[in-house]
Amino acid sequence: MARPTPLSGFPEWLPDGRVVEQHVLEALRRTFELHGFAGIETRAVEPLDQLLRKGETSKEVYVLRRLQAEEGEDASEKQLGLHFDLTVPFARYVLENAGRLAFPFKRYQIQKVWRGERPQEGRFREFVQADIDVVGAGELPYHYEVELPLVMAEALGSLRAIGVPEVRILVNNRKVAEGFYRGLGLDDVEGVLRQVDKLDKIGPDAVAELLVAEQGATPEQAKACLELAAISGTDASVVEQVRALAASYDAVTDLLETGLGELRALVEAAARRAPGVVVADLKIARGLDYYTGSVYETVLVGHEQLGSICSGGRYDTLASDGKNTYPGVGLSIGVSRLVSRLLSAGLVTATRGVPTAVLVAVTDEETREASDAVAAALRARGVPADVAPTAAKFGKQIKYADRRGIPFVWFPGEQDQVKDIRSGDQVDADATTWEPPAADLWPRVVPAGE
Image (tube, rainbow, N blue to C red; front, side, top):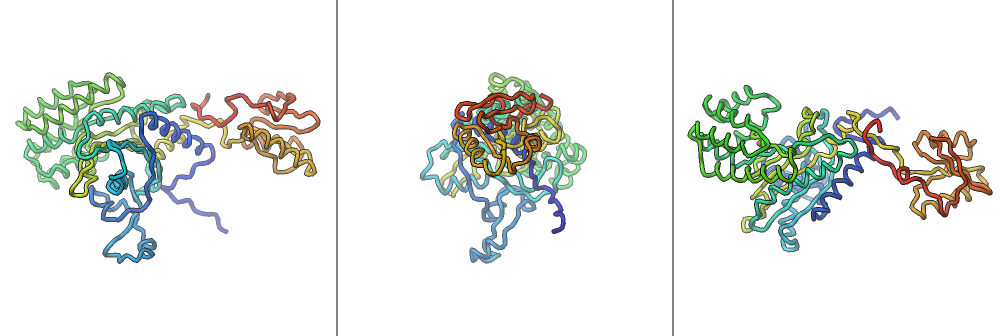
């Protein structure tokens, strides 16, 4: 068989990297559950018309043809695609199970998603996302728009101990943007937002050109949109800056004032509960159409070029069956993007790539059963143990353990002994009582160089 060619955009971590990923996922899950979020999982496949009904995502969806054929569906009637995020499937899940859910419903979801985009650093075609959302029946209090980004900040903050950089959660409010644009006389709000969302990628001059060419803005209106996007800050002074800008263009509207009130509440609450973490940034737009209130993007301090690792916002009509509406707010962490940066930048490392803490040596094949019994006794007490694959010389068995990162080797005999192969210390041991130091029991993730 010829050596396989790697597929770009489909990350496969080595064992050490997988340990890092599992640590990150467990830290997120633990924080989410501490805040009352229940875990769910949804199917990987959704009807294509549902995946595409909000936002510019048609190029992102991987369409499934064989499954569709097996379902007996005509291609023109119902195409199926892999979900490209977890929010749209969650909205469908809420509608299907509304009668069995207690609202407000708080859920977390950790799954793989698939997105058809050009692979590059931190951007994959298959990756793991971790989402939290809360949805209400008919209404959802604004305070959840304050609480969810702070929960996410706490979840990411729990990773600081292993060397994850600080995070900044950049926030805006779609009501502010929509109220300002309508006050300027720009009615294609979604189109303007999609162009503004490209600021970091193509720069202000190119965005201004797009606003004029594609959204029909005048040069003065485009200039005003860019001036709004340039406003940022960590306190409520940003509200007065926006208000003054709107007044200078005679663009003050009731919707703008409503959005500014909500933005002020979010910034002030965040300043009290997580000082310096939340920054009001008026260029944050989020290109998807379904966001209606607060919107969020999160960057790693010192690694801003990676882009947002966590984003989301408020949505009021995504989960609606025409009679009932379930407004929600949520955020999503691109776990694979985060892990990729942690590994590529050498920020964190795993103490070992295998769970095994002890390798039980085999004196000869006739006594392998005795080695198996030692390993069984250790495992029964929660000590991860493996048995050497061959009865080679002990030196070779020690080298085998060293290559795998296993810290201890157990030598069975009339008096069993265990050796710390890092220090060379070797002591008598009993499989019914001995255990490794707590730091060696399981693999740990630590800052690089520790």
